[in-house]
Image (cartoon, rainbow, N blue to C red):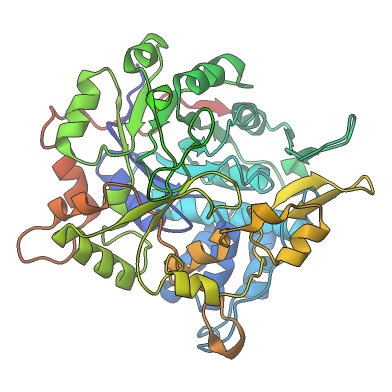
Length: 490
């Protein structure tokens, strides 16, 4: 019988759920998860800063295609780190037919993050991706599987095709994935494809098929994933609108409350009994970061809970120490504020933002930032008049967006999340006159509850403190088996 964790540590932001955090949680017998978002950009910036501690090099030395690893090291590593105040290397933005260099970078960066998270223990670790960020999926997933990732989690969309991708890679077949293209013409080629044999150096390594957990927000989407997915779905994470990051839009016509936040109603509530009837493991997420809520979830028939906010402020997370300190101080006095911004994300999904002076959530900071789109993960592919696929982002310079057929009203209030999320973890791009990109912290509505993990007289806490606190009100379950239930393909 498969064993599953009671606690899934959320895959947060860009590099907030880093390998250190995932490793710490996995060592405790729960599911540690790394964020797979923008790992290629993060990896390049770590190398440009001189690879402090030598961790990236250790991961590269373990990569099964050594010539590929050598090329990346030689191109991006800066001995001693780049000069302070200078920009990070510019990278080409992803497109449907990525150049080989970008495909290799995705493979390697995802491998290294999972490899490091798995060091020092035998428990599975997971990786979290956003369905909205489609173009890097194939190379990123393959790199994570090369490192032996145990779980793949995906939300921010309906990831129907990912289980089939996992099956294909585990069987050493090429994987295919259709890119969602706005206004795609009948018969237009939007398919992406990756054949690992074109990148391997020698024999393809044996791969385990990770378990797939779909992150959904409703009973309807839960049923859809189980009925229509291209392969096996081992479980579901049911995320409520109180969770951090991107939230699913409310069902029906969008209405805003007095503060300008989306209004969620009865139609947005999940029926737990119907989830139980589906017969697959599920975890509840969004406001479940305490022992009482874990106990409640288990009593309702859930396998456990997914927790993000509590882990985001742990010592092991990648969130910048100064941001942690300021927000923890607010939490201790109950003054932390989180705003569900209906406009910030270029995806059009509501996005949780911690209101913090001096960050991108500060109107003065937002007004002062010059629009630029140079990471481009949230760009929207669209059918261009010439029959090709174009790419636009509602947070890019307005004139550029309009020239690509975008509408002016879609640019209002948009923020560059790609650059902001990298800034959250200390890798802000530098602009002219050494002006750094501003941070924009995304966190759950339960920000102020994280004070519960601070012991008297302490200003910080560990991932172990969070796990111990969450489990304090339930009967301990045995740690789940290291590789139980995974498909092995020779």
